[in-house]
Picture 1 (cartoon, rainbow, N blue to C red):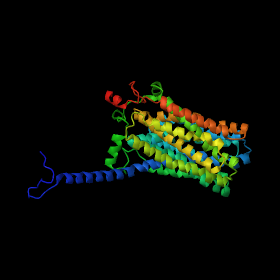
Picture 2: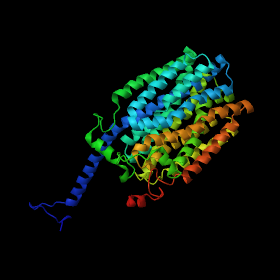
Picture 3: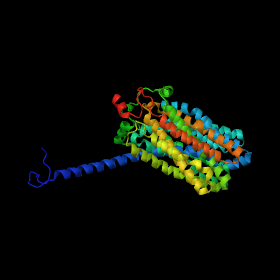
Picture 4: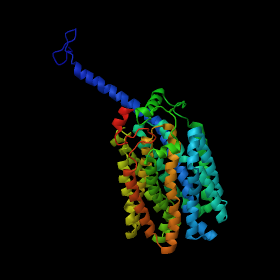
Length: 473
């Protein structure tokens, strides 16, 4: 029987309080473990920063046309409808190539495919600066869209390979927040660049930065199995914890494939529909917000950049915060798809844009847009995380992510065109905001009703019963 308490003595007759000492040792070990984990996370954070910067560059190149739209339209004599088609055009090829690019990511890995895509879309962005007609502008945007189709499938593969399941919400939030940091950065610099050097300079600068980043990506990125700068303890943690369930850890398990995933219930369809309803509103803001602020609030190009940057900057910070909260609430219990409830809340939060037609003050409308963008950004990152949570086989992640983003962009490519027709026919943006808000409510309903089963699972057990599923597995 163990002797503890104040009467226990050592062999030398001195009193020895073993329990407090043991507690101190345990606390000391816990402290050392926390320090080790903090150091390990500092290595993983470089991957998150790479993904953040990849998304940021992607979206800088997307929105350059939006901020240069006024001088381009004036120079080339373009109507709102023509601008709407130009805004949408890169999404045509982007959507077409998403699933093929996802297949390439699954076959050749994220490093090579993302590098190829970045080189292609950066070159196309730079070439936009020498376009002098509607057809040439359209051509450069189509090529850019094809290159950008590599970004999300590659990012999903990187997160699946590098990030433990308990940290996936936070990392997806960081990745996705880059898509809001990009417009914020572009908003701040676009006006001064255009005013000083003309609108082509904006496209030259955006494309050049992308090519510089490409060299960094090819130099430093590697899978955790191959990264020489990664410590062995952290490597083993990543490899052992990057699946949502124990049965998910075998990366060599055969792929189900896209057709198989679509046949096994409505889950992937529901995720894609939710993504579509969300992305519609995202592209309404990305493509038309600068023109909206100039037309309805009387802002100059320079002032538009400053005001437009504010909602995006707010969304970047709050999106990361929401991702962190989701990980803390779930505490690694992601196999059952519980993240869907936070997605529904975020989409309803984004639907506040329904009130935009009733707001006239510029600061109030910016506040509404900031709240809506925060909900939109959080929905995207959490929906990506939910896809990974529900996906049983890691080798399907590229094609599954490709389909999810296709679903988003089928809706997204319509937003600029529909808005162009709405503005031309009504002379205002009120109905555009109503359409976006209604779709956000539809998306919240979709995520709660259509995503109740795991992806690629042979069982008929709903995803809402993860313990039973694990026991049967």
